[in-house]
Length: 297
Image (cartoon, rainbow, N blue to C red):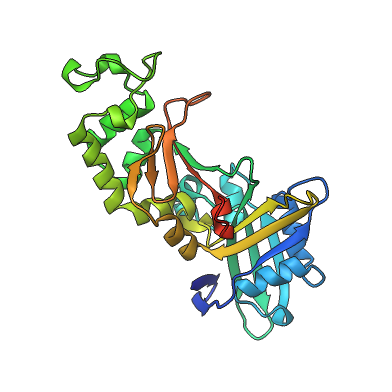
């Protein structure tokens, strides 16, 4: 596995040989981004933070100083600049942001500052799936450059184009959606459905990288997942993995129809968003519990 640190002198690559599944105490439930930052800032005494830093390839004894900041969901241009991202990269950074916290490290033996961006996920056995991305079909078309025919039928799937607007020879006589808001993917004509699945199969790694890692200054190079201990709810199990490993893991498996007429892209579920405020967006969900290696997930 290869992790990446960014310094003012360029990009430094280092090998990581350890991946640990550990545990920690969390009074009152899950730890939020602010709590995680506090643990990193207290790394000299916090054993969890020490383990995480070791997984990321750092010798804790050689850290001269460390900063940890929460990256807010909505970021002002001024805040982006404070976190070291150029104005030129601002729009890309906002659009593709996946990191939740950023760690900055100054190593005693090197005149360099290393930055590590982490994505944080919380999960439990009763609600394992997490939404990882949702946008209108047009936005994904701009990102991934699928053609207008794929875009049209994805909009039919989300309900942005309703069944009434589809030519009669291309829609089922009886719709599974009784309110006639959209078609399920297995109701789309075979040729058009095959075109959709072919696109996602051929571009699966790129798509999952955008969904999980993102792009730009706030892309995430690490995924830290916490889950409640089923026997002791004050304890949290955790797993930290580099994003190359995460993307490759969730890319395993083919592109296929899910039991409810949505689509699985590897281990990630693509479905119609539904609900408010944006019911006709595409939504992607993943189960972070799978990273713990549980056969029951």
